[in-house]
View 1 (cartoon, rainbow, N blue to C red):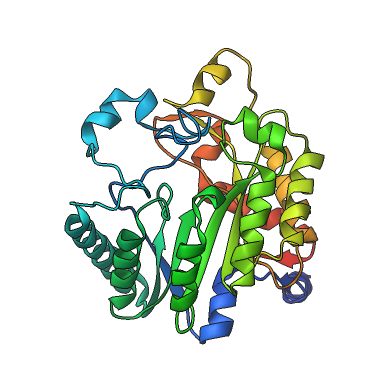
View 2 (cartoon, rainbow, N blue to C red):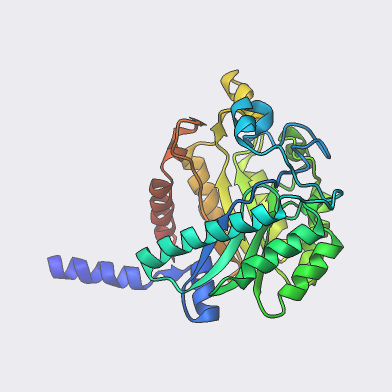
Amino acid sequence: MTISLTNSNITKKNSLENLLTIGRYFRSKFGETIYKVPVSISGFTCPNIDGTVAKGGCSFCENDSFSPNLQEKKPKFKLHPSNPSNPYLQQQLQQLELQFNATRQRLENKFGTKKYIVYFQSFTNTYAPIETLKALYTKALSFDNVIGLSIGTRTDCMTDEILDFIEELSKDKEIWVEYGIQSFYDETLDEINRGDSASNMREWIVKTKQRGLNVCGHLIYGLPNETQEMMLETLKQTIKLNVDSIKFHPLYVVKNTLLTAKYLNGKFEPISEELYIDTVVKSIKMLPKDISIQRITAGIDDNTLLAPLWCKNKHQQIQKIKKALVKEGLRY
């Protein structure tokens, strides 16, 4: 009886369909595992924080406006595309190299890694003078065994000039642009103080794809007043734009944000664990076979998290989503 049950489990496991994760995409394309090395360069900010398009940042974003302590710890110098002067460029280049080398060393020691993509992750990494971007991107690509870049940004911070440059880089490097979409409902974008519109997001995603660049879209599930139907409709709209990859995030509330007060005053209820998992599974089943998945959940395990508490353990969430996908015959 035990042998029969084991064989049945093996057969079931082998019958699962492998989803196109970003790891499988890279192994298929390059023949080996590629690791993303996240970097955070001081001086980068966001037009939604510095007052260019809005004030206070997105409602879920922790920033200086709500935390004087953060402001004291961070340098006062902030990049802005309209100001070509950058007296801190050499410091930023050094910071880039130090962060990359430190992370690469850890990855090599732990996994024996060989190839990397530098991921400009924090804040809006095209919101700077073009010469600064050229210097940083070129420096990152000069590191040993770096095969490309992934650039996190907003669609309202992309320009034709920047696209010209990264299109040129993409001729012999793996270049990704990661756009924070979050939602394609303008009423939601207004509610979260996004400072951008659905039409503008569509325009720049199309322009980026027309350059032959890889695009990853970030979606947030559980935004204020959004139903599951709305979340899935945003996914459908994202798929129609021929993006290459998707990241799914739950909306969680941390201290020092616009959303903090609404949550504490009972005006915002975070998405439940059950609804989030169900929505992500439904979303993954909707994805075309050629769209890779880069993330299925997110969380934060420190005392800044207010709610929902299930976001405290990201690893546990991944396991639960994987288990739910297995029931659908899918292997993440």
